[in-house]
Length: 323
Image (spheres, helix red, strand yellow):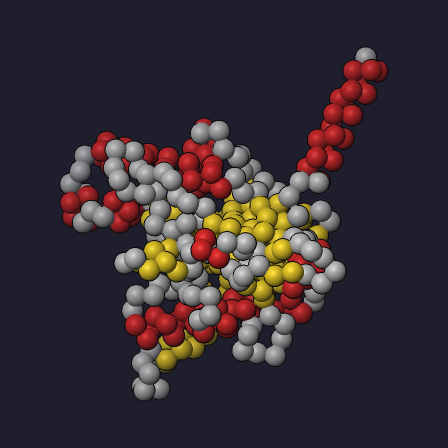
């Protein structure tokens, strides 16, 4: 009996050691309208035609779309995953179950934004949350028109949340968000910039206190855009977040590369033949001091919805690996 108990204890210690020495993969992925109530958007079907379909057919289409996205998430194989364009908690739970059914990771910890609209943001994690918020609070003014100062409006981060996790004795504070679409001209651009200010305002106290900060998600902005500069802190006097979509660099006193080795893979979205990076993972300088090297890459979406040529998503996943 004693020897059997000793073997169990040793096995537990070995498993614990293996987990503590493992790398941590953090990813973001836009699931493209994986929302049961608005699934017609994913299939590019008019709403009035969608509602005419038999309920059984709509359910089959939901199952097929969910399986396609679950297969991509299985391929990502991330420890912590931010998801954009997902639906209700029940939708998200169904997605988690399908990932496990396909032999992918089991995510015992998940959190969903409290967005009132159909599109939500979620985080799946193999590590427990030390804190969590279902929103990124605050408001910011923006001008709806360029030359009409009377048309002031207030923006909020309508799709966002934050969590904290512990990894190898370090606490990581993650802010996952899906900013305003690029559709809508100046008004949309101004609203997205205002949202970037709100995200910056929420994480800045943590950054100034020397904490590890990660902002990730579909930011609907290019690497050098005003929105990215604002959300990183490039246009104020406080510390900046680092763009992991940058070329490979070498850290002092190290020969290890960090971030992208192949710059042709940085794109996450293709529109009319133009490839661009709209999904980002931004990290605090403090993380370079603790985790080195940090590798960044994207993943090709190889899965389509069964019986169609519709890809699981029109976005590619982006991930970083912490050593």
